[in-house]
Image (tube, rainbow, N blue to C red; front, side, top):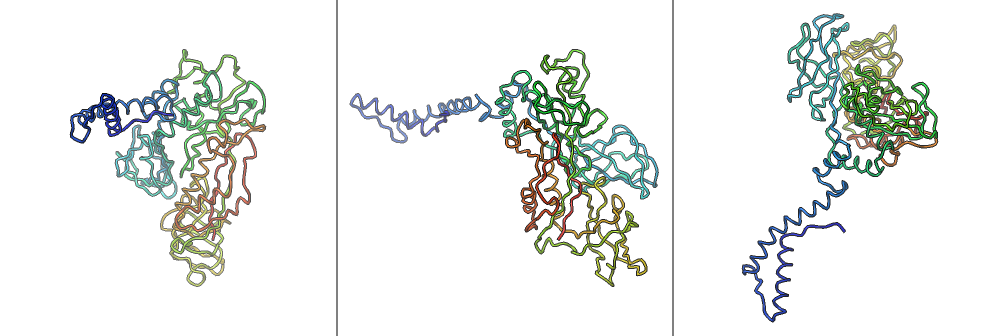
Length: 509
């Protein structure tokens, strides 16, 4: 049984009881009432002993990380070489405006943007070229680690010093959330998983720790396949059940609202992301050719066992398998769809003019002034659908089409032949819930199974369970029920080492 510190009242009463018993053996009676000499002396001793007890209890808890304090956990991490995850930097896609269309503007080195709360973001040096609407997009990165610098779509960032020819502000189109440093519970789980593997030279926990220990690349988690021979050429499945072989699949931070799949770890310093591709920089760190910070070195410490040859192990990114989601929703009256008809978008639509087939002007099913969800493509917005407010519709009886002007330009021309959907005030929260669900999926196992940690151990299942996603959507305010019509059944990736990624996300009445 673990040692439990006593309160000062318990200590005082125990002392008084002991002293009273000693006096009684001599045929005497000790006065122990409150205010007596014995009571006051016992109370003074109890104050000191209470602190000693508290220290003893904490020392007992710090022996193992399952109950250790913050200081104790940090010491365990230092001793075993498992640092506390420091968090990740938030990124955002920001739309800026130039003085003229189809013009290239230089961005000087050191350019920064700021949010109203003081958060700063670095803008990569180089140049951008505006489109026909004088708009261009830059990817900015927060200067501070953690979730506090995460922005929402629509937030306005201001240049500290605007590059020549560009407007002083920009609007966030999409963002990938930063993550905070691991709290004690998360760090404790990491240490316990490491210690339960009996750290040695080249076991599963070591490979995972090595991949996550390379700090120059955003590796948030890693999954080890100890009996999976690497493929001859990546991407590839490899050969399962081959003794002496190891494959490590590294995953980056959650993608969130970004169009960049940040879960695919960059392969090099140029931010090149290749699904199913090798991570040479991480491998060079394990081979002792790079420091944890990414600096090349000729005298580094080789981490992998010397008995493992260069062709028997690989550190790589996950393969990806796209999955579309169509959800049929029952909503509260407050969150009801702006319309339930389903017009077909015509291919003549542009970023500022939406054309649909049929009469949806004042002479038909009038959609003028309503908010709508427009399919503009997954390349410009995660999930593919963007919110737009329709202007006054004009119906052309000759063509059988209705044209709506758009006050705010879309990110891309609408997809011809797609379906225009009604907007719900639950839309933004639904997107967040679906994105988080996909961002929590892990890579699929080999056959025979060898992935570690297992799906049950870490909760990063690779299978998309429809009931689980439906449950996540019904937890959104305004959603009474959600039924996935696509996919029609649970989905498990068709190949090993593969994560499911979201393609289009559509909601229907």
